[in-house]
Image: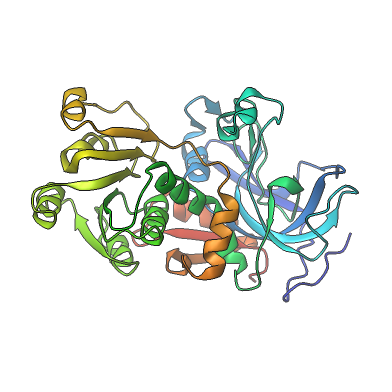
Length: 360
């Protein structure tokens, strides 16, 4: 099968995939899967795939909680590409369409899906989550219902960030954010950054962003009405209380997944404010119920996202959100192992690294 040329992209004929063989061992080798196109599926020539923290964690630790890599698995779940084949019943897409893909496929008959909570479906098959293969390979077959056309003004690189962007937009929706809110974003990693962009798009008037990496905080400071706080040098609570006349932030988005940061979220929250837990901690966090009760804090939790991909694509197309400052390094597919080795060392200043099948 030959991919149709679109915007200079003809697809890749590389037969290999980036396979996590076991904890700490990656290889570029012949793709171990051969997918059949169903009537409601599309086949996509992958163009750009982002490197997510979960991919890196599977590489370095071999597991995330209950999800354990027991056999070789292809990595990658943040992707964009071009439709090169359509199933006979597909009506919303055509060969040649530039697309991004929502990586979780639920069971449509499940109770969670019927309630509209398909992201919480225990049966969901999510790319690069054991035992489901990811997309760091030349082509993938995916349901058309979870594949979204990219407008001409949205690049492949931006399309591959729709997946993490969806987490931030979903978090802001869960917060019921309104224009003029003062927010705190704990953590300036990729998810923290997209949450900043989503909060800004929702009309946030001030966003305090924390991290220990000044280079990431410098990027955050360019994204909007942001005050960066390096918590190694400055007190977040002092800064927030000084900036809000002692009242506190309307919303705190915990995006770091760090227990000590999460434990302090209530301290900077205003009475009646909202905390949204976005980052997934690797250990239980201390939670002071009495502090939360005294403030009648509303607590929300985010697990991935639901019903949000089209919104993210529309915001990118309109210019309401610009993700280009977050893309800090791009590798060729040939450099995939090198890319993961670099990412595993948490390099200073790197926010979103991507792998492009077009790059040479």
